[in-house]
Amino acid sequence: MAPPGPLFHPPPPASVAIGDDLWQLARVKMQTSLYAKFLGKSLPLDQVKLALADAWRDLGTFTMDDLPNGFYYVCCETPEMQNRLLWDGPWMVAGRILQLTPSFESFQPAFEKLALAAVWIQIYHLPIELWEKEILEVIASQFGRILKVDEHILDHSRMRYARICVELDLSRPLQQGTWVKYGDFSVFVLVLYEKLLVFSYRYGTVGHGKAHYAVSNP
Image (cartoon, rainbow, N blue to C red):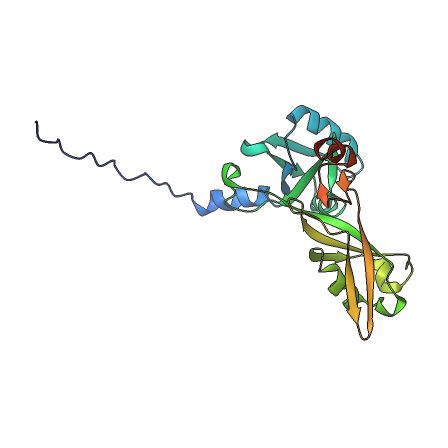
């Protein structure tokens, strides 16, 4: 038997350094950009751009490119447009929820997941004594991280329901409501999720409506 040959040692990977001037220029371009991904299967870029151009026509102009792993890269005309897209969502195209997140550095779409979305919730059946900003935030935190409180809550100009924007993980089951215990009392408050049209309140999931469960769970 012939003696084994010498072991092959591949050379170490090469590295390259980006100058600060080029890096800072790239960061400026990202200040009004967003990463986007559909909850579920992605859609063709042209179809998405056409639908969003109509939905966002009053907010400003934008460019959109597709990335690996079903992601899209959205560049907004202004920071104000970027904020409106984040706060007024989630947006839907062909029945699919488009999740948006501000762009961040070192993003590698092939290795990233996006399940979080900013969603406005409406909390119903609140006793009047619980209608305080700090108490409402405690209740809303049971559904997701607090992002923003509707200004109408603060001045009590609308009290049919409390409206608060929270960060939701749409890959997990969503709650229909929560029990609130205080003093000697315990009340159940109901929550509705704005713009989540394809949502089963029986099964607590986004992406499949009643018809889906009627077939898949006879």
